[in-house]
Length: 112
Image (cartoon, rainbow, N blue to C red):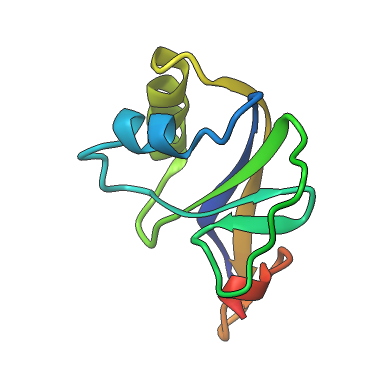
């Protein structure tokens, strides 16, 4: 069975939305791109129609995707986030499986 690394969910602890700091940290980085930020299960980036103002927690799930990423590109991404003083609390690698590239991870509503 074919297993392919396609991205990573990185969890960042921050009292405020880390979007602008992430964008500055990864500017010019091409191996992985920020595709989503969620907080308490609500997608906050990219913004969706009808998005409501709700109280956010201090833990943000940031999804980075890339077709040609490797373990080295993940390490480089972590370094960039660390240098931007973003506190990474954990990460989960995202894989697809089989000839059909079936995701082995949950898709956000904006990805379906």
